Image (cartoon, rainbow, N blue to C red; front, side, top):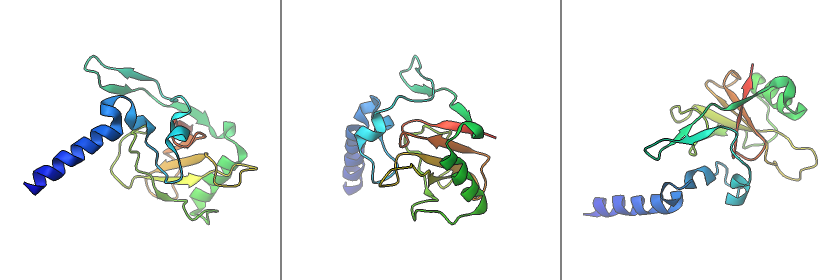
Amino acid sequence: MKRAWTVLCMFALSAALCGCGKKGSQDATQDSGASASQASSQPQASSDAVAASGALVRGPLASVGQKQLPDEAVETLRLIKAGGPYPFSEDGVLFRNSATLLPQHARGYYHAYTVRTPGSADRGQRRIVCGGPRKQTGDCYYTDDYYASFKRIAQ
């Protein structure tokens, strides 16, 4: 009985947090410092479509070349390849991809890194998320809107 109650509570909480499938999961944030308004303030970079069943079908992510990235993002990629040292203790932490904006992989595949923002008093909203073994930059994504949208970094 206790297990059934726990499952029911988890289902109700999930439905409440996700807005019953009405785009609530896109508003989820990955870092503890973000508010929902920060995460939902920008449009998605990927082309999304709704299938006949009502399920959200993700299109391919936009790409950005390394030459098109801000200098600070290029420096972050260099630090990732070198294995650090990183400017913030939060760099290299697990990125859960709970909003599934990136291709799905097993837990532990993605890690997030700060991209410095000139003039910002805190870490800012820019990040690079890389998948695969550490020090590898072959599967990396750039966001300048705190995980609300991503662009794949072309090699």
